[in-house]
Every structure is written in structure tokens, then in C-alpha cells.
Image 1 (cartoon, rainbow, N blue to C red):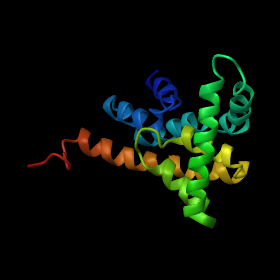
Image 2 (cartoon, helix red, strand yellow):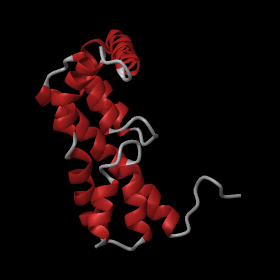
Image 3 (cartoon, rainbow, N blue to C red):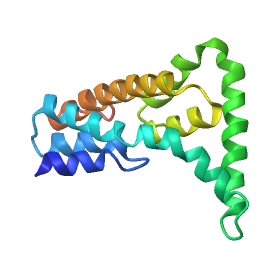
Length: 158
């Protein structure tokens, strides 16, 4: 039952694998299977986001109630994406992977995939970069969660 809960937690935007792994560790789930379940759950929405997010934002940008917000999202995404593209140059794959791999709120698979979609980075390249980032974030969260669960408080130790 907990594996199913962890699977769904890893699909939630912002929370994603960053919240699912600590929940699994706190409930004494096997770390290997937790990792597999969390990666699958976190990656499941990625193709859907890549293929449809931009289309939905473009469609909604001229609607009465949601148009301003959707237009803002498109403009912000394109502006931020172009800025990142200018800094990263040919290193967009690595930049996207590291962006997703840093386990902070707002830097996960959902946001990374949306940015890749807006920038037209290419489906296969984007999905692989996001998956590599999810793997990195999962490793970081797994190590941190196990250390904290075992009483090794490496941040707040006196």
C-alpha cells in the first residue's frame, strides 16, 4: 500500500521525488524498490507535459479568464528559457539535467519538462535529460533521508 502512496506522491508537482523518498524511508520501505517506484511515478507525467503543456498554454492565452495567466506563463517560460539557453549554449542537456537533479522545490521534472517544451528542445533529448535529473535527485534524497533516519544529522550537528 505504501508503495502506491509513494508512487502517487512522486507524481505531484513541486513535491515529486523530493517528497516521496523521505516518506518511503520514514515508513521503512525497501530503498531499491522505493527508488524504482518513485522514478516511474515522477517520469510518468513527463511525456504528457512535454507534448501538451505548450499547446494548452497557447490555447488558453486568448481566453477571457485564464488568458492573462497563460500568456504570462508562456512569456515567462520563453524568456527564462532563452536566458538559460544563452548561458548554457550547447550544454542544454546538462543544464536541464542539473536543473531537474537539484532537489529544491520548483526545480523538478514538471518544471524542467515545461521549460524543455517551451524551448522546443526535442522530445527524446528532453525526456532523457529529465530522467537523468530525476535519478540524481533520487540519489541525493535517498542518501539524505537514510542519513537523517539513522540519526546522522549532518546539517544541524553541534
